[in-house]
Image 1 (cartoon, rainbow, N blue to C red):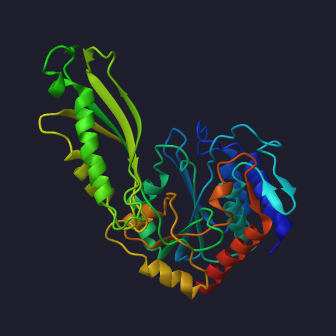
Image 2: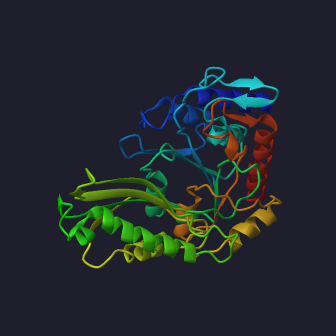
Length: 361
């Protein structure tokens, strides 16, 4: 492999501002034009612009059996950097810059492979994984295009080990509506939105605790993160809004858990549910990791431990398509000031991806 060429591609990618939010990007953005120029005319390229910064760049050469998925958007730059976060710096064999680890480094590896003549390669680069409201991968799956592939590799940072399972992420806003009035009225016990919330919370915390199979099992990782309700201590609360989340274990169902959570509400309660985000675990409910594990073993890729962060691999899994997570770097380096990825990790990922393609020529 050509290290300098790979780092040159990474430098260009990091230098293109794809922070999400604000997700100021469209199908004509320079980053997609750059990717198209690098892979060249041998590739069939389609760009899907769904509006509001949701864009997919899809490139195919030959008859690939494996799809590589990368997101090109990054979290906001933030503060605390030692240098310009959009100007790649190589220091002590570490590549510093926003997105270098999460996950433009993987994109640079794949673009380098394409440029150097890789055969039977399929790339899906998207722009809306970071932040809420991503739709690109789901729309790709819904189109039926993903079903042509025997395996999907989502190139999130895993230390170049194949991650076969991870937790899901379910984010829900629940609004309880009470009947306001003076707190001297005895009906406050039943009519206060704060009291209705409290009864529900007690029930759902028991539900979450009962999902543990042992004292060391974290269970559903249920968390009530934000509560806002009432106006004064002597006024019956008219409304209470709670924002909570759960991170279910591989094979569990967000839909089933949410139904059980809803059943924890007392009869007659006026309650509304909004789901800003629901990402299944990997494998998704009804699936298992067998085919992905065989794929990793066949390609001599070491399997890693399950991780707690969510990836879009679960979207492919939910559609019945075997998926694993494999990319350079470590999650601790992502989303941080002075984000970095080790150059030797990039080289390892390049070789792993090349090995996958070689086996499928």
